[in-house]
Image (tube, rainbow, N blue to C red; front, side, top):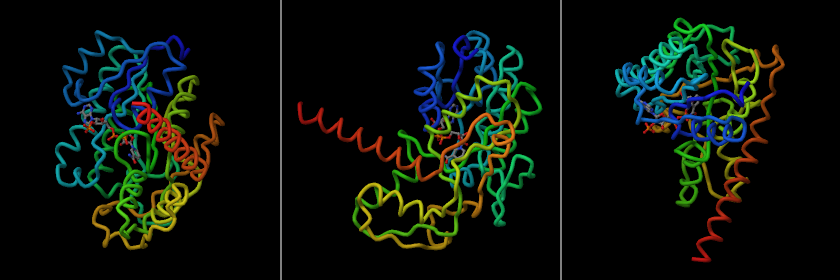
Length: 297
Ligand SMILES: NC(=O)c1ccc[n+]([C@@H]2O[C@H](COP(=O)([O-])OP(=O)(O)OC[C@H]3O[C@@H](n4cnc5c(N)ncnc54)[C@H](OP(=O)(O)O)[C@@H]3O)[C@@H](O)[C@H]2O)c1
């Protein structure tokens, strides 16, 4: 049972790892968190850590996630995203642990207007997507007790993400460009973490898609973020990706269908609109709380 399990979260200082820790804190007694202090690319270090700490479940949130950096540094991208997953799979198998590998919609090419289920064949077009797919492959080959969870457009309370980028650009008060030819499902790290916690208390294995329900373009998502932040008057312009260098080379249509979730009936993700509303409300409450503290000091 979950409450008796020792869970090791790698990449625990990242958006999802941190949120997962916060979510699991209430449900599980025993959580280990590591980030670059236990480098996933170092097989000996990973084996040693696993051997000493003996987790029942390893959740691999460690990754090189910046798509552009992956294009510029492909060896490092494969090292972290593929070899890292391999090393954790070897270690988890040796100690009899389950492995949960977090993966991405970018394993699909995104060149058509079709949603992708777990039964579609991945065809990544970016180094990031290819290296993440290689990581999935290692996990599947090396530890039969695996779950691969693919999500998309994740935003959490910590780290850098699209939501914070939009708010930062808006605060500068100048108009900015956002692509309207990239379509996906924005997914709150909190909602994804809730699903992972739910999965931990089941006997499910295999590949699961886990994105918030509904789809939108990045442009529409940015408009919604600004509306919820009370900044709807900030001018933003819809553009094609080629003109918005910071978003190139993202695949254009990577919408995940949570088919395994429907079939197994283990969970239902909320709609992306509800999740971003909840996220913005939490941000607002945190800001008010912090400002209250500052006033007292
Ligand atoms: N962000 C998204 O939109 C998105 C969408 C779909 C799927 N995913 C997947 O979801 C997972 C979590 O993503 P995220 O957004 O939480 O990523 P993130 O915020 O970038 O977190 C990844 C963490 O892993 C750390 N890390 C990097 N190299 C490492 C290494 N060699 N050893 C140990 N730790 C290392 C990073 O440290 P540094 O920050 O110092 O590099 C960071 O703290 C990843 O598997 C990602 O591929 C993300």
